[in-house]
Image 1 (tube, rainbow, N blue to C red):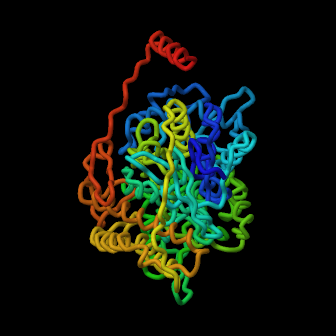
Image 2 (image 1 turned 90 degrees about the vertical axis):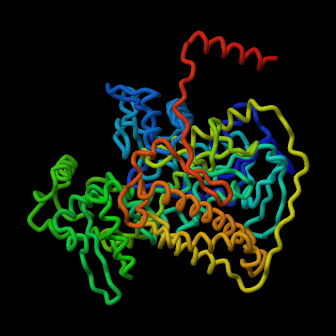
Amino acid sequence: MKKAYHTLIIGTGCAGYNAADRLYDLGVRDIAIVTEGRLMGTSRNTGSDKQTYYKLSLCGSDGDSVREMANTLYSGGGVMGEHALCEAAYSTRCFMRLVELGVPFPTNEFGEYAGYKTDHDPRTRATSCGPLTSKYMTEALERSVLSKRIEIIDFQRVVKILTENNAVTGVACVHTVTGEISVIGCQNVILCTGGPAGIYKNTVYPESQHGATGLAIDAGAALSNMEQWQYGIASTSFRWNLSGTYQQVLPRYVSIDKDGNETEFLYEKLGVESLGLIFLKGYQWPFDTRKLDGSSRVDLLVAEEIKQGNKVFLDFTKNPKGLEKGFSVLPDEAYVYLEKSGALFGTPIERLKKMNVGAIELYASHGIDLSREPLEIAVCAQHCNGGVAVDENWQSEIEGLYAAGEAAGTFGVYRPGGSALNSTQVGSLRAAEHISKKKNRGCGKPEYTPPPIQYGHSTIEKIRTELQTEMSRIADFDRSTGGMKVLFDRVNRLCDAFFEAAVIKDRSQTADLFRLYDTVLTQRAVLSAMLCSAEAIGTHGSALVDRLPDRSNGRLRQTRTVTENTVSKIKAVSPMPEPELWFETLLARKKEELEHGAK
């Protein structure tokens, strides 16, 4: 490991590997990737029944365009116009790059990349490699990075982004095993650390994912839309989204109380209507306040059972109540889907085997036999639609600090399923292009004085567990304004005195200490944004605030929540750009760029 690099990339997921790969190809070779664990993170370790990649349509006769896709992204609300346009304009380029790297997206014999409709998608822009799309992407990008001998600095948790005069000068790291602290100089950092996975107890983020949004907060960067999340039903022993065919095969929803009594609570509360709602959870997996009279009733009823102290399970071994007289009781949409899938028979596990055997094999690979045992579930945080506020080049307000993928706050309120994977590629490419064209400013000799660290009986796990539990209790999809105010005050006080309150047993826990600090900083920012949004907008998107009805009055499209330090404000989003499209003008501009580059 050298003492200084031109650019450091933090993270070894889809965004991080792509950033390094693109920088190298653009001629920026003095780079390295820093990671606390090369095999950790969300990209490599998560998925769903059919993990989606969202792109411009590339098959069939239905029309599509860059501007149409951009409008879809923009219409989700809280999205900056420049981000929507970039993510649409770069979509095909980034997708085909993955194809060329060997990611096995399905195509017909004539080269059309088949698509299907995903959530919040007016067309059929979605594609998939199956349950592990992001894993295949990560591995393909990693192969390209390794072939170019780009340095990967492993087992280093970045604990501070060093700045001077509002510009990046380096990073401080702690070795995840020894606890040794080191400093690396650089003039650019691309933060590709995924979402803030550690702030909730009920979460579907893999246990290996920690996130590092707190690095940007600590450096003074603004955040955007940190109150906007996706929540949905997931298994808890092995963390995995239970969307798509897991729901469409109609499993039983079972509640078991402390005395071992079993109840099919959905049927008891909703009768035969529950069957159609279970089916819809496949299409409508994220909790959505617009569907409180529809499929989101399932999420609320699951959460109510858990709050009463019961455990809730999905059982694939038996049919749910209501199907005793056959499938004719199902709504037309569910009946036709199962009929076309050849699955109007048997038990849920038999239907799942017919429709998506890979969904069964996935759990089997983790020692869980769906044909024998039920899955314990909860309504879990899955994706943060907010993150670091970035410009059209995915650069924050700190010179040289970029963020891409889920670490960047570009997603808004409602995003099409799979748009996050597209964003990992677009954002990291935009950052790489901008860095490659910038003037070299050097990084000087950054210095870092670590905070005083307290040793003794460790308090790390106690603090983490208490705060995660409270976040899931009052600040997830079902939010309490009063509860969030109390928790915000508590977390704010802890941030101010963190290194006095947090104690570790020895140096081996140093990295864990800084992970917790990152989490606490992020929880404070999230609560600030949630309280601001609760007061200004109320119930909307994935946030049911104080059990009150939606009073957003259509303002979601025009606004976003910006958080700086502990203060959050509602601000207008930028409009969709209207850039130059006259070919002759752009050709002349390109010639001028090439001539300037040659000089």
